[in-house]
Image 1 (spheres, rainbow, N blue to C red):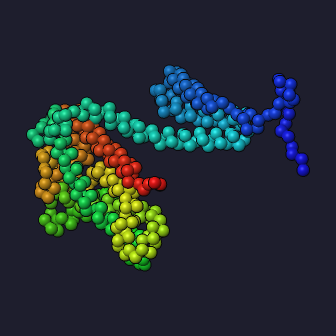
Image 2 (image 1 turned 90 degrees about the horizontal axis):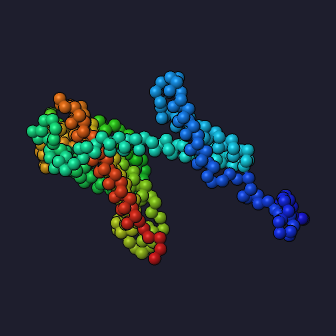
Image 3 (image 1 turned 120 degrees about the vertical axis):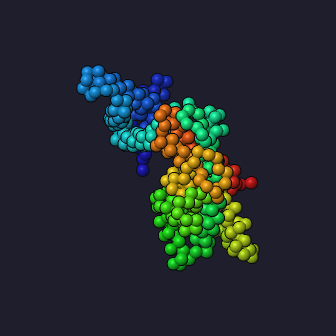
Length: 370
């Protein structure tokens, strides 16, 4: 059998014979082609929309419309040029890459918009007074959110103390011991709890404490119980998945050495899955720290400091933002600035929790080698 040579090309300038075409590099667009075409299409779309707006055909200039037109035209132009120069397979590949990048940008735009809006509006009141004063006896300008920050930290801390042991033990039971109808029932109810509205958790906590203390009860600890109802299924699910990732060989090695099952779980399984479990717990805290409805029902709102979660009403940052926005005084801008500053503080806390979760994952993940 004889091999087929590549197609002949122009003669070699050195005189050594005909040159050969590299089928892997020929017929390819340069790397800068797609970005350059995208920028050109966006600039052209902006110019067209600006001209149409100036002519009164579409009303006011719309940047969103210009970006949409530019993106669609860029995808169509890049795909067409690639189809002519590179072939059908390369054109299909470029088309799918363009769709993926476009979907990523579209998903990223709301996040960037929210962060930029909160940062711009919350920066004017993001000062020392905002973090050292409460709203007691403050009408109009001034005041701060110290009472709300302290309340948020206390309520979330108590919710974590309630949720983590229950959720972790439930996950251990489901993975290591659970078999039969009981395990299936627990899994079913955990799935149901994952999707319940937060207002239902607040009503549950209010009904529970109303049976004990009477109607009209408002306690910070009641808010912690409401948040724990939302937090427990997240902890169970995340811990369960992390425990399932622990190789069975580790368990079997411990059993072969005569280690009892409970000690295997404590000394082998939990340390191996510690990084993922702690990360899941941290993300569960970030999930519930911004809840407003249950805290508005059972924890109430106040303008004074309260360091005791088991006595009287307790303010939280989400409720603080809501009350400042929903009940402005005569000077509306002052209340709105405090609301935006509270929202910015809450976003920073959630971002810090996510960064802590990533740091914990990096520090406690099992080492691959010596």
